[in-house]
Image (cartoon, rainbow, N blue to C red; front, side, top):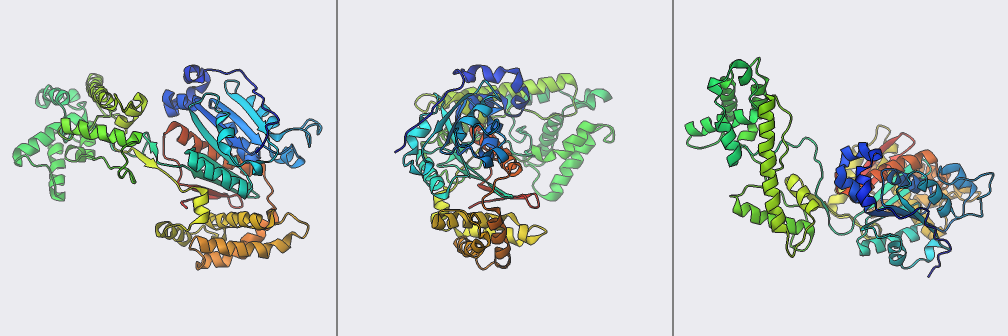
Amino acid sequence: SFCVTTNNHLSPVIDTTKNMATNDKYDRQLRLWGAKGQRALGDTCVVLVGGTAAGTETLKNLVLPGIGSFCVIDDALVSKEDVASNFFVTSNQGDTIGTKSRAEVACENLHELNPDVLGAFQHVPKLQNIDDWKEILHKETNGKTKLLVIASDLDPQVLETLSAQCSTLRLPLVMVQSYGLMGCVKLQLSGKVPLLDPKPANAPPDLRLKKSFPALDEFCRSIDLDTLESHEHGHVPYPIILLKAIAAWRASHDGNDPKTFPEKNEFKETIKKMSKDINKEVNFEEAIQYAYLAYTERDVCLPEDLGQDTTSTLAKLFQALDTFRSKHNGRLPLNGAIPDMTASTNHYVKLQQIYKTQAEQDLAEMKDLCGGKDNIPEDDVQSFCANVFSVTQMSTRSLVEEISTQPNEEIMDDLKMNLMDPYEVESHTPLLWYLGLRACHAFFKKQGRYPGTKDDWEADAPLLEEEYKAVALHYGLADEALVQSSGADICHELTRYANAELHNIGSVVGGVASQEAVKIITGQYIPLNNTYLFNGIVAVGGVYKF
């Protein structure tokens, strides 16, 4: 059990879901994640457990863009080390050192960054005495619909307890650590988290030329290439050129599309012959470049592990999609966006309107299919339709699972592959230093302190090396030559750090962690899976799945 000694709310409650998405100061980030993403931030309470530099830097980067509220939970008083390493834990001529709660000071300074955000803190007698995190976490939601937890430089026992309970409560957990010149960010996503707006890079345009729709066909028929003047001919949108080219091809090939490589090249030559001057008509060059869109179509890939799930939001959306496809001869809902292209203004605006109208009709039908007892939020349906080819879901192992059970063969093989492509200075490969941090945690569990924190600090290095070997064995890496040759030097360096915290490392960690937190909160982009290790000695990082 524990008692809360202080619980200050430092600003009035603000209905952030209504005003934050239209506030001018958020203009730039609105261009990145849109009003929907901003509303998601405003609906979220972030709870920071541990007021160290890495944690406050992470929280700073979430307060500035406008999360709904935050709470800092800690058991420490302000120390000289905090003042030296943590920009958000300050002391005026030493008046807070040893007397004031670190959570309170951090909360005050963080709240000054953005008055829109509701800030609070809790100072508890001892974090390791908290057996039930459910009450303390949900107490600070302030009516927000989402809760995200950040664990900053917590002792191993506290971190594992928090990890286990966040896993049970299905709360996303972001673990950050700044340890000397090493920084670590680890994500824990319990259950299957839907990613409805992953924003894949280099995705082909969704033009549906292989299986067109009536409005687009009608627009295509209204344009007669043979009667156009040269200037108009050179400004016909390439989707129209491709539709006409594939129609002519099918008419002369028994209704078949190009299949073999020679046929595909012949199809491109057909497009080239349709041009009046291929060297001057950029639209026909674009048609040749995107010729594959006329005879190929993308299909939906079910996310991994969707399995027999019928109750999640993503499963219900795919069920609605199956119904939609059965009604439309296999056609998928249209995205509605078209890329930039060489075209006259009139043709481009008309084409844009055709795609937009069809997309709105498809979305309306999908909303009807997702209504009723399923009652899926309209924003989710819209995101699903706009990203139907790339939606996915993601889950990670919890920290407790990682520590208590060995990874499967696939993960072990991936880790070994990472060691086969090391950093140019092999001993600075980030994966090796992650094993070292895990060894430091194992050392703490046995000794009740981190290595190097006593006067005869070098005596801890051999003990840490033994833990390092055990950790390497756990991950199936004990026989790797690079692990064996680097262990002693890595353990000596980590012992020398004595769990010191450097603000610049904490700042790097905070930047990475907050970016991943925004991905989780907004459901946009794909979060890292699941561990990032930053080696500050050579300023190189690596992402690993455990």
